[in-house]
Image (cartoon, rainbow, N blue to C red; front, side, top):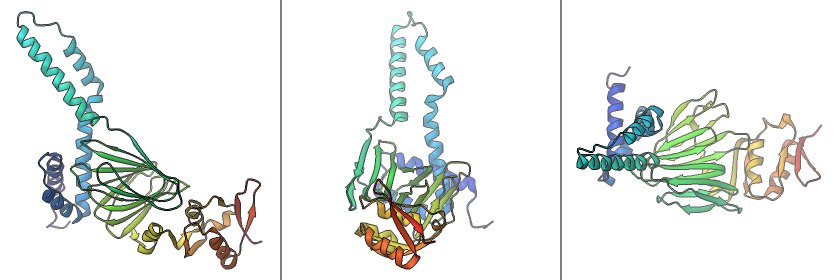
Length: 325
């Protein structure tokens, strides 16, 4: 162990102090920037902060504990103190205030669910309620809730780039079996058709949690990307392909040793004609090249010429790709 590295309990205490400070109403922008610098300096800090923030959220969730709820009911049902009416009124008022504050704290003010849909074929930029900026790829849908304690987004389908506005509240992003946590970063998330999740971090700090049989937790550094399998296994990070990350924002699809089914799924977002890979032998085929978003004909021609792939039309108009026999 590095002698200069702080003890885990010390690191957790620091992270817990940051969680409390970020919740404070008088937390300044300078403090938030100092927190981001502290967080980005060491992946261990990201893990400690996520654990402290998770513990904080669990404490708030205690209102659902059946024993505590039963105790609250017993307090409400106690006979009134007739001999001390002022004390009884004060106690009742205090109980009402406590219940109201507790509900507001744990329910987060019951924020409204907002749905954002890009049904077009060009990237669409949206400014969210908290000031965060999201770019939705074609055929992308997400939902968002912004409360006074926390912010949350769920990517229902497609791909997005999110520039998170700095705030006291952490941002949680759900995508399939994965949860991403951050304070103020820029990253991309994509839900693939087979249940895999691609995550690319452009700047800031990010931690990914996964659920499933192989659930894991892993931090991600700027300039890295990774993939979460449907089982929950998180593949080791690898260098981010900037041309690929920036291409779709400019209506270009850049494939760099991209598995054929993924390349086809991405092109399908921009075209009315659906293409499917009908030959298992083609699933491991890696495709490289740059194509205009929606230029399906150019991609299919390149596949036919360079990879000896044929296409066959189904009755419903879907095109099947098969290898030449």
